[in-house]
Amino acid sequence: MSDAATTPRIVQVRQQILKKNDVLARDLRERYREAGVFVVSLVSSPGSGKTTLLRDTLKRLISTYKVAALVGDLATENDAKKLAESGAPVRQIVTGTVCHLEAEMVEQSFTVAGWSLADLDFLFIENVGNLVCPASYDLGEDLRVVLLSTTEGEDKPLKYPTIFNTADMAIITKVDIADAVGFDRATALASIESVRPGLPVLELSSKSGAGMDRWMDLLQSRCAAKRSMSQPTLTA
Amino acid sequence: MHELSVAQDMVALIEAQLLAQGDHRVKVTGVHLRIGPLAGVVPQSLRFAYDASVAGTNLAGSTLKIEEVAPTVYCAACDREQFLASISRLRCPVCDAATPEIVHGRELEVVSVEVVDV
Image (tube, rainbow over the protein chains, first blue to last red):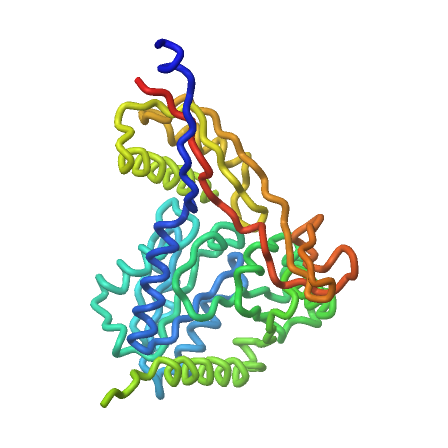
């Protein structure tokens, strides 16, 4: 009898540890679809130019579209202030000690802000500057963009393959100073292709504006494509 | 270092599962995990975070058994699954074709737990 009590028995669990986040991200994706809002998230290491690119993106879109942005940082509201220069509604998510955004933080943030998703054309989410942790968390976004600046090592994708693997496209930023910093473009592109074959890559500079038109075209066409897919079907 | 969040989610998931199936009076002695290299979780960091996360729960003192899943891709050129030596190079080890389709490697799951009745 004592044997039966002390011999461990196996209980099958078979569950994804981040199931709660995955389920919430799926719910968010469905809500975004119903609302017809195109959701873009930006991930990169600190200092790659996420905030500057996002501010300038918001500035360009705001005359034609309803846009809003969420930005995650461990501390300070500095990025939210910089993004607010665009005139778009912005909300800072201060994560404290948490090094990434989770679907629940995103949902709480736009709920507390009182934003109606149906009134938005674009929602941007700037993740915490970190190439490791954000990779594990789906936020329900339509487009996850990973940024790599010309001032970083060209082999960064090889060092952080997981984040590049979860992205839908890559943007090489700060191309205006590529020559000055000795950026090896071919090696950087080969590194991206190595960790994620076929990943679309855009090259741009927020400062000079080079490549920004292509980025805008991509966002607008992807947003329009999503809306045409999610048009409610008319029934008799 | 998001392994602490992952460890806490893992403890909550296991406790909820045991409660759901009526195992109220058990002590967990072992946890079997499967982790792929594309899950974004470092096994060593998770072990460290796990020990901190189980204190005061019925998982306290349990051992973590981590099975590291080999990264596997589907090679369209070979029409078969292939193991990769590294996730930094998603190309078929046999024919060198690009292999973006990942079959295994993203796993981050609790397979089973060992429990004793108390």
